[in-house]
Amino acid sequence: MLPKPEARRRVAPALFALALIAPGATAWAQAGADPSGVWLTESGTSKVRIARCGTGYCGTLVSTVGAGLDANNPDASLKGRKLLGVQILDARTPSTGGFEGSLYNPQDGKTYSGSLTPKGLDRVEVAGCVLSVICKRQTWTRVK
Image: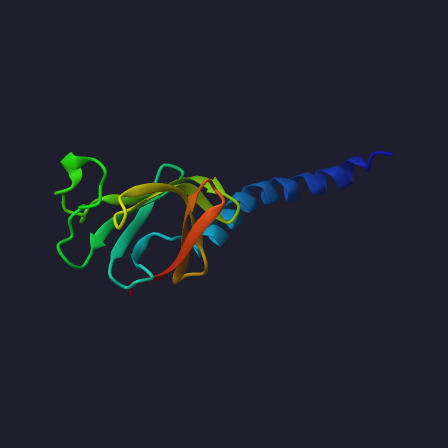
């Protein structure tokens, strides 16, 4: 049995308003966990600037200790480059609770499949994995 025409006329505007509000509410909820900004790595020796790129986020080294050279890079032509400005995080694929992609580890010169997961306003979890089974996770804290 169909609702009476006057009932349909009252419900239709409400549904239309909900359709307009819902996408904005979702974006607002996600904005609270936006990982854009500068983050201190778990070791406390490096800072990474995370910014939007594509449908996800990328991270670039903005501070490091020591000589700051990419000495462990397997590409001989890159061993002498400065690490400052090197993109180490490329997490452009949205996933449940975060973003997936790859992570470059300058300490061993390897690139791993990885993920970036916001854990509130001031913490993110970064994971680098081998064969998507063996993973090392770090919690980075937002620099104020």
